[in-house]
Length: 330
Ligand code: UDP
Image (tube, rainbow, N blue to C red; front, side, top):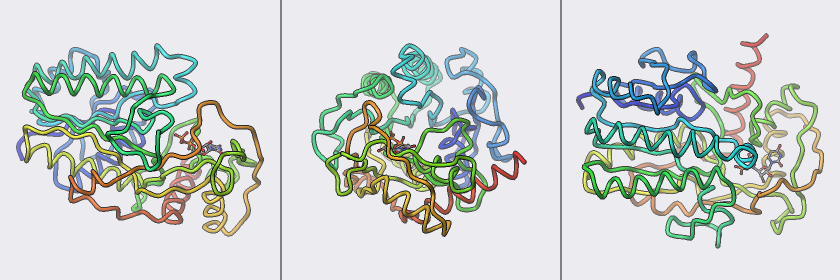
């Protein structure tokens, strides 16, 4: 296909894996990243990196120069508790900046847009597994900022010649199995990242946020999806958008099964053959007990099938990347 795929946030965790998946599938890629939380070294050398905000009007030039035929939009702010304390940052970086990017896309005639949405759009789900048609009632500004973007895309796709896929991510974890990228974010808050940091001695323990949830062992249950499977879902979604220009899609990205915090830590212990110290702590504000994707829609819409849906494998890849990072910093 003619022209490039623009990947915003391509120097970040999920975006850098999408860049690898696109390049490996033979697409040409231009990354737009302001490098506030991302790293230039995380961008594969086969891609072009442009250091710029997505809301910058000069995006129009980048779209034209690289003959961009699709945008995958990962750039944004992603820390839920921070969104509670600084909501305007989230409405600015996620909703307002994305509005500008969509406007540039429409003006340049970019026909396809893939958006990083989130299971946080559901809030506390009415039922588990949660399906795309279930109520979306976010319980934090992060989820609201993403849901507002979904609404913009829906309305813009009805008015202009552009179609979109809004992919609602569940809990993304792991790292490129070939060791080319991983989660490098400083001050990460996500469970598997924290647990592998503890496993290699970067932390002395892992806090368990709540042991009194109505789940099988009292700890929170989540649907952990390997980042490379998620990246592959984006490439497959792009293909669908190209083949069916009149259609847009909102799809959960998860495996349809959940693991508790205890089960995740058991996996880390198994993979490392040691025992991480667990500290029982109170619940974190706004954490639902259980979040699991009903993934029938994505399985029906795309030829995508999970390739890395083994918890020990996810933990193993995350751990290998954590060791790479530690060597890099040594
Ligand atoms: N969690 C935990 N200790 C940590 C980080 C997370 O017990 O240090 C729990 C959290 O309460 C939730 C699950 O692990 O039940 C996944 O949390 P994470 O922050 O990774 O993702 P979230 O589901 O909040 O997006």
